[in-house]
Length: 493
Image 1: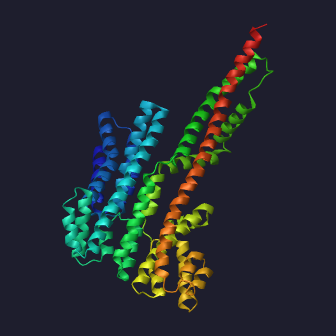
Image 2 (image 1 turned 90 degrees about the vertical axis):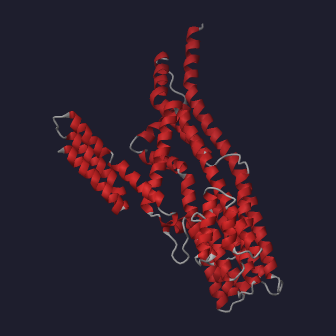
Image 3 (image 1 turned 180 degrees about the vertical axis):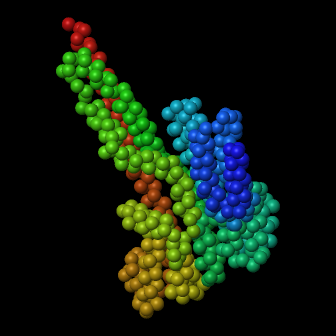
């Protein structure tokens, strides 16, 4: 009877996995746990029957997850739905947790550090591979367009020189172009992981028939990103949180279980005349506060920071790959853009990066003879910060109302450089050339100031981490020194 109930549950979720994958994936784990718990609490005469029933109930979730994963793998990338993506990520999380458990068992605390290093190393390889693929695709398309070659046939011929993922991307783009899609649409369908700023730039350039110029700008941006990512950074961004996590973990263990014992020993041998050093008492108070009810919020914040550090590569990758909708941007995009736009240092980088893309497309549009208002409108379709896009929209509104282009750029906060480029009294007829110069200037300025920030922030971070770790080590060893000193003074006349 009990085995039959477990089998029926398993069959039901197998059917549900094929019919409604999302419902099955979300409900299979609670149903599996609930059924296993109920069977374990029931009184069953035959222990073997009880064990088999619990085992069948326990495999409901893995079987459901496996079915959804296999169906997602057999589905075209462009047609995959959220249950397939959730199943893939679930397996990935399981893999990382198993890896963490294995490394921790083998290497103890060093296993956690090794796990962090592995995740960072894997993410670096993923980013480098993604940039390499994007550069290959765009460079090939750019060379074909500049030579006026038939793009579908040229991409299909190029695919013969590649293997694996690159070959499939070239063939898929060629197929969608053959079916009549524009290049931007073919890129989105044939290369789903193509960066959003590339597809938005291609779409905007196709409207003004200036695709070769736009591809040159895209190639320059990709090469700049690749050169920056290939540089050796003094400190990885995950390093500070990793050090803090390990240091606080060791401190909690010592301050809760070991150091108080040293305090008792010091008090006993001195007859209550000596107490723990002040630095040690501070760390003990911090540890006691964090494990008490009052400090639970601070401890939860620390745990959130640790998990954010673990998932930082995927969070950053998800945010960058999340599609930006011009008229109705998603909540995560609006929230991220709002914080980056209003934070002191990030505001400059966001403005600089957005204005670099706008100047590039404005140059391309004006060289094709496009009116200024249409050029600004096309720039609004680029992958820009949402707050900057509002400024761009206000600039377009004032230009269409008849206001001077340069004055409108100044009034709406588009920057002095852009206003100077459109000043007809100083640069009459030279605006496209000046915009090209500004595009190169903003790209070089962005990379230079990013390196300056790293050069200043990383040494300061190292100094702060050194001071924190040094204080913790000092506070942990001072009690032992105090005990040894007191015993020495007592033993020697």
